[in-house]
Length: 277
Length: 218
Image (cartoon, rainbow over all chains, first blue to last red; front, side, top):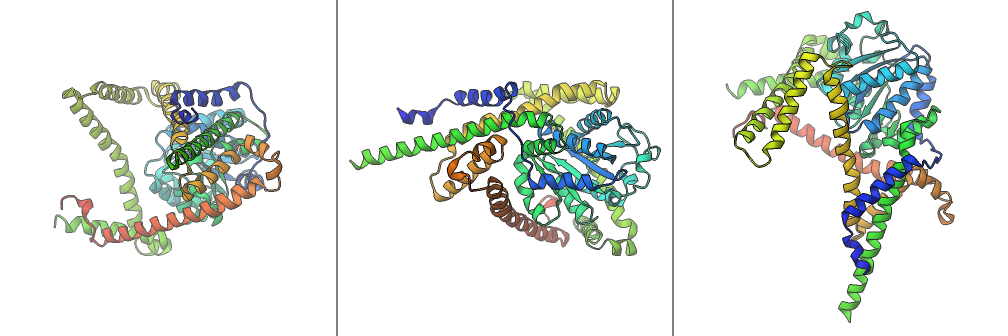
């Protein structure tokens, strides 16, 4: 009887996942989130930057990974704007252009910042890592105009910024390739600028060697990283809300794995006994 | 000449980009415009690759529709989507309030997010069926996966601190210091180094004309 659980209809599993992900959205658990060290590193670095410093944010994600990466970018922008920093945004993902533009406008407006003076949207830059290399040689070369087509000379935010080397911090929120590793290769290794960022939980494990080597200042891994950052800036938003759903789903999957292993071993033991008899 | 000229161009372009990366000052002192020139060429060619990709997509899908291949309706939907979005962007612009942005925000974005979200359901089902501790390696992987999966969420962290037999073990030390920064980072570093060495050797073979398969033919 017990062994039949191994052949549990996947529709049942799908329904369980739906319930695990859906119910916490309506009934939040409100569990405190404890920020990890790689996330704190980014927060502390930005806190130490004096007002008027420039940061570059690359929105390297598409709609499929937006749910993990956008809350990180929004939280960093909120902190940067509060600190009086100037934010220049761009993307090396074609699908990222509209997402970056919407987010920059939304957070800029929310924080009462002025376009062109406090923040700027340079839009999509084709060429993957070569686009980053071109930025290291001169922003004007690859970005003669902003996302809306206005010549960049008209924006006071870029006065004094000629190449990647003129940014005090470079952040990439990355949903895959091209992304954070490409920024590390060029902006950190070649231009010697501090690089930090966030990525989807799936690729976070691949970036740990760069934290250890000191090439990556800090890292936000997946929705958890975003929720930790929202906690640090004291403004819990969508990542904190979604963490409950993720937490319960993780527990469900872990429970299913344990259950299937228990059934598997119980069945195997029974078979061995009956075989031996 | 048909083969020697592309190999020569590849060699010059490759060597210039290597010098530019490792010895940027030397590059500027000797051949300042060459590296920038190749970089600009690459960016232009990269942009044109979208046109080539689009053309290839149209040819492949049109031929399937023409042959009434099984599932040709999907190919037709793809082409209608492609040309519809293209026309919306070309004639109506891509800025906020445009039809293109409407399609992006209300069609493309939810569809992409849905496709990605489906992974959760399939991962849960696959993990239930396939993730068994059949060998020692699988058991270690399973234990590490369970600890990371539970420990990476606030609910797991909250429950961990209430378990009497695990109270003395810090979850952060276990996950961040041991599993992620220890075992995981060591493994990832080995993979990165191995892949990089392979990439260097392949690049050298291409630059020196030993590997010629990218030219096509035999």
